[in-house]
Length: 452
Ligand SMILES: Cc1ncc(COP(=O)(O)O)c(C=O)c1O
Image 1 (tube, rainbow, N blue to C red):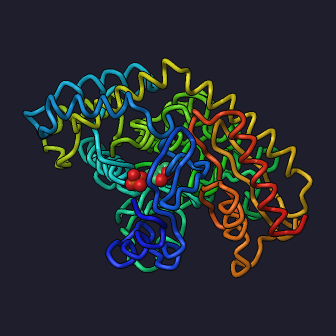
Image 2: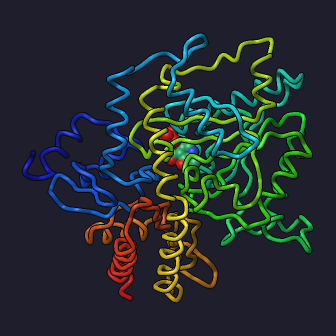
Image 3: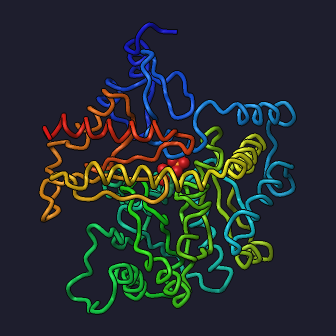
């Protein structure tokens, strides 16, 4: 093992291109060498609490032998076979059956991918295929939301509503439209729209109706939304937002696609997040937590009615991935789901999330630079602002979030940010003591940056 992290980091910088490649970030980065529960160890031997479960995905924590054993057993038995038409494998069949049992009753058929962006691509293409087969070939547009994150392949990037992902890769795919996020801390209905007597959540949902009418309902294929926006800053919608979204989608014949890549598999305190609001989607996208990050696997689940169209459509659904239904990924997913259920992980995420949020509120509610503290289950965020009364953000060059994160890292907490929004979504196995330590570290880091 190398004596310090400097040496592997030098090698990294000479040879690797990273996701969101930014050389300066990597020069001061970490080379992780070990993981155990909620703790990661870097090449210097220093331990860090994993504040974001890897990348929201390692829900069961690091070092779970059962998952490694499930993968090894499957690799020995059948490491790979194609999932193209005419070819299948037992683990993929079992996983599709298992998902049918635990997902929304509306969702009955499954296609597997290697991750979240591929799931986004699959749902967009499925929606377009569906409408073409229904005799509505003009219905191709995708409406999604500001602060939405759906991946970075070209169509997924075009659906992603964080505009800093776009400029260097323009032009985006045509036919993608964004509406405001329901963002309870910041959303205000436009002045020219009469929303009197309408709640903030319904007003935000009505943005979808306005966009559909503006574009023409006959041109809109689907609405894509994360039940709780994750990478965009843990934005938890109002309770009446998604019920109104469902009504609008039904009224204008627009498919409602839930991107549960982060929120699926227990993260928000229920197995799938739209259950909080009693709403069922037409298509679900999933990835990350389904294998606890131990194998790259994602997918989409679709309504029976859409599946019927795929089964009987006169043109083949020409969509495919070499690794769709990978038997090793499916074996790991089956074991992950078994553990999630056996250890009541969604309940744990709910209880631990409540503890984390309560502690964050106790520590920061009166802090002059903390504008909002929010969360659902085990995904929380603290939003720093320059002026609490106006919600004015800090100038970007002050890099407040980055400075708080640097101080937190120095004290042994590693996570991610969205600007000056500090994100926390640790593994479900994080102990109460570790959760409390995360809040303590954030308090110390905040003191180091603001002096109070
Ligand atoms: C909600 C959501 N959708 C899609 C994706 C893209 O997933 P992937 O990075 O596996 O392509 C992510 C990744 O963070 C995500 O959070």
